[in-house]
Amino acid sequence: MAGEVDYLLRVVVPDLEAYEFFAERLADSVQLRKLTPLFTSERIKSTTAYFTQYSAQAR
Image 1 (tube, rainbow, N blue to C red):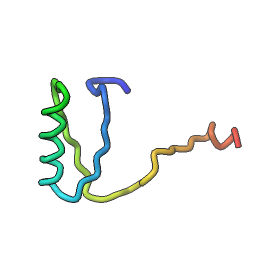
Image 2: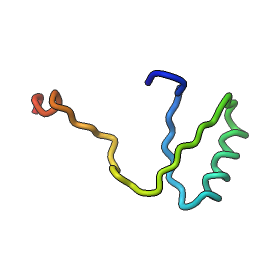
Image 3: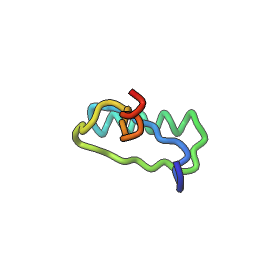
Image 4: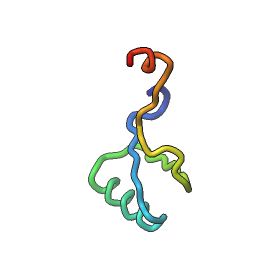
């Protein structure tokens, strides 16, 4: 990763209230300089695998 992001943490919660609870617990347990939340409202892809033209040639 490049830029301002040091860690990317994917968290699945049922609603905003659950996210706020999680974020507060995280901030209390880990020293954070900055927390930038990004939200999605629907799942587009549920796997982290991303195949490219190079990975297809290896098969």
